[in-house]
Image (cartoon, rainbow, N blue to C red; front, side, top):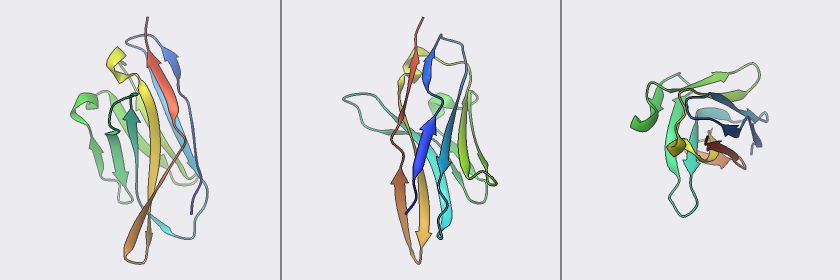
Length: 119
């Protein structure tokens, strides 16, 4: 298993920036991919961005050009740099890590960090 701790959320004005961090505890299993989802109350959790162990990234259309996902392998930390934030980006943001255990991939989630974009 792995423990994930998110940080960096908060209140920001429209047009502002935030950087979310997700620190992962060490695991004896290899990382297949990591990513960020977000969820508003009453709505389904939606993909924001993901990155594979090989560095391939994927973004939701709504955040392309504004958000950047990255990792610091030495620190075992995942980041999400969010620029030009909009009120519709307001949500609880969750990070996940997918660990490959044999032929099975298991997904682990962080506890979430709230991002509120408002003037």
